[in-house]
Image (cartoon, rainbow, N blue to C red):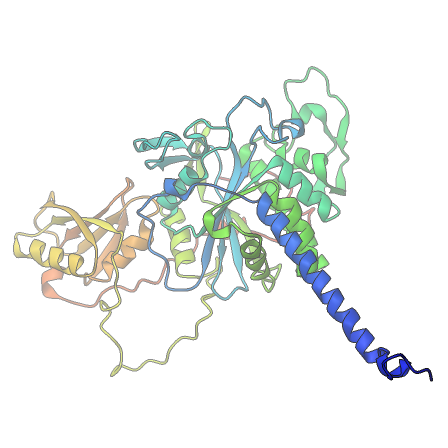
Length: 496
């Protein structure tokens, strides 16, 4: 043992092993925190948000549960390197290539994606232009035209969100736009996605304007694709099935099922999500509610308990009208109503809430919890009792509904009160019906809600149940689960 100049021993001034290990651990933690902070800073700098000022101020009311609706838009924007991946002319405007509404049930164990064909004829509500002015309502417009309102290279996600809310009556909580470049990067990060082809596919199948068949792009059968090859797979339209956009949607649903299966098999953990987030954020445009890496990753982590079999893909009920697509009613309204009530397409209650025990002495009046905020209603009196109109106006305004007008109905001898509703408005019509006894719901098309008063309103009675009608078989029979075999259901376009 040696003695130092100040009288202490070398051993006394030395570092014991446990102190050295603690110091090393602290350094590692500090470096890790700095590294994680740098990663989050990098991700945050890559995220693009769209201006929420273009969103409608008249959102549909949120459902009673904690479910979420996320609008996902696939954009073939021509800028930021997308042209080289098949995005077209860099001087062209941004276009919506595909879109679906992802309903995440409140129990966070079920999810349903509803695809909306881009050629669907819809009502596009007023949307904001780049100069701050607003367009007028467009009827019988193609769904994908909403994304092009304003003719900008980035597209108009807010207008598409407004249109989806108008169509479905569902409140959209978040909107995410993914462009070609981001999609290609995602498929590369996960190491490829399994797909299945019913036949060999050549370059001419991707571009029907080619004079020759061209090179082989895909061999018949199951295979893994990523990057440009994955883009080619989801973009092919004319070379597979019946060549329709409906067929391409079915193929995209099969692709997304395989992608989710691959991500789940790798494990939804921050370690795996960070590379995915790095690839995605470089080509994502999101609403302000998802504007940070922390929000995006937290949202992704909230989906980790959703089982593959309970992740479903369907297409809105549809039929052809010439070369365009029309929404089939009341089938579509029944689907939206089921989602708003947090019922799966097979009727399961996925609200995550236990049904309360019946207690007549403590049960509130059926109308006490009715909120009509954001719901416009017109009243038509189908009786000779003029006092019923004022009674109905008072009942509606008391619960927050907006009465847009009153009038006599075409007949004054109606016995039953009828709630007439337009496309996508069945959930709101059911809310209205809770204030009126012995009521019938009737789909009439258009874009509004009418209360046609009958003598039953004067007689009193019990409000109807707001339990949604069962989802039609046209939806349930065509559903795909994320755990389905990639080679199942390769007809790509039959039906409708």
